[in-house]
Length: 261
Image 1: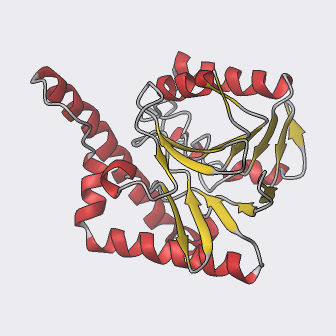
Image 2 (image 1 turned 180 degrees about the horizontal axis):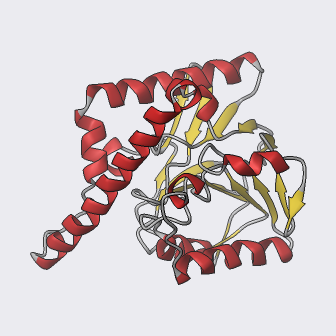
């Protein structure tokens, strides 16, 4: 087990077929931390309203998180738009897990990062919910198709991971423009508050980079890319792309879109 100071996760989407709970469980077994931050869309109530898919592996992940909280890990949950029902309980705790709307985390090196999900910077989610729901349905469809494509690639022994959802993001100009606009909006708001950086999620596009003097960090997701952020004991932030083993990590830079998406 590898020791880090903090783990940041977002967009796990428990309750859906696309959730890669087995991968997440192996990740949580590998890393031990003082803090565990859940940065929104941990449980997908949107998709669950259309039909619940809750596997044994997903249940194991929940139990693992609760066990960490019971054993002294400080677990903080920032609800996102897919689990926005939990925002009614912000300010309370359940199972030793604190529910907050946002949180300012001071890293070991003294840098201050605001933790927020990020949907408040998404104009589609805020003002055109039906479009966001439709997009969610289409995204889940792409992810499910990708499972079939992955099976075909393994059958024909085609090496390397390929993401249909990621391909769509790279090829659709509007998708790329949305990501860049989202990042700029988040960074602008954080800079006005005099903070050093931000850790968010929401757009399923993992990143660790500097924009206009602000450290912009996006956790990515556990639906398609299986990415997370860890803070090392010295305060250094690292973006990890989990592949079932502690390999493929990316430190101090942005994860390429073909891997992050």
